Structure formats: structure tokens, C-alpha cells
Image (cartoon, rainbow, N blue to C red; front, side):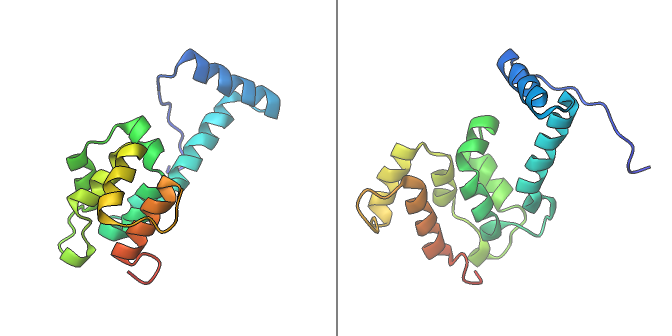
Length: 146
């Protein structure tokens, strides 16, 4: 009975609801299809969180890519995000430092200020997200088997 469907209740603003209705109308599908589509997209994007062996630096790319979206919608606190990322990670070389976790929740102007002190800008006028990504890639050897 794993294919059994469940009714779920959620709160939406009137604007969000109207947007969903408009999209459904434009795509000639039921509104419920748009909700299922959105949930499936979310599950695909957060799939790494389903495997509890993904923790520490292995979760950095996920939180880096979704940094603004997750902060805006979930309002993480520094300690909360630190515990999520480093969930039961005992290996010090795989842990993400609290200072680096904080970079994930700071607004862009604060990230730029902090990065300027700890990691020289690779080029002038670099985008904040690109600079932060480069900092993490170099520090944690992301994409290099690290």
C-alpha cells in the first residue's frame, strides 16, 4: 500500500494560490498536478538529505546552491544549520566550521565583507555567490574527491 495517496493541508498566500491556479490553467492541467510537480521538484533538489551518510562537506554544495532560497523560506539559525550539515559527523576533516556555516546564512553584503578578510577576491567585481563557492571549493577541496 505504498502507492496510497494522502491528503495534506498547507497554507498559502492568496497571491501564491492565484499563481498556481494561473499556471495550471495555462498548462491545461489540474491545480493538484502543479502542487505534486512542485513537491517532486523540491524532493529532487533536496535528495541528498534523504541519505544520512551525506553530511559535513558533502552537504556544502546543496546548501551553497540553495542558500538564499532555504534561508528565506526556512529561516535557519547558525547553530541549527551547523547541526544539520554536520549531523553525527565525527571526522574533523569532514566537518564544516561554524564560521563557514555562518557564511551560508549571512546576507550577501556581509558575506562579501567576511570573505574580503579571509579569502582574497579572485577577480574584481566577482559575484558574491561565485566568490563564496570558490572559497568553499578551495578550503574543502570540493569537486576534487574531498
